[in-house]
Image (tube, rainbow, N blue to C red; front, side, top):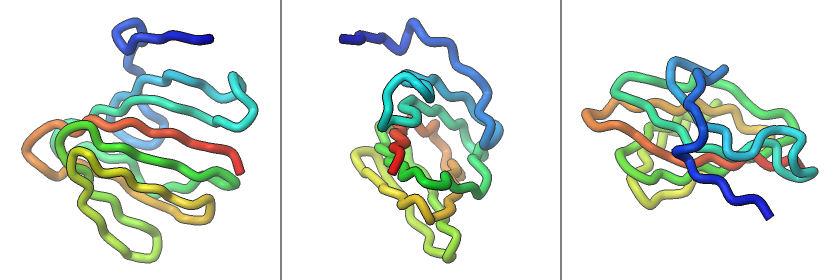
Length: 111
């Protein structure tokens, strides 16, 4: 059993962009989970276009809205309560061009 409170985890700069993230589960802790965490993006912050080779990623928007652009040009606005799943071969960019902060969870699973 593992019980974690977000208040116990320090926010760290993300390797994907100019925003902060808190890693709840880090790579190597579980065989099928690459990472699980919480992201907070202020207005105009973003995760640059990237992909996760051999891994799918699930986003769940807690508050605010996220703009997600996929490598094929598909653009989605995800509001609070929305979940987005990216397959292992889909590149994606996540940004917050909106006036309020974006908070979301992400879960990256190994295929």
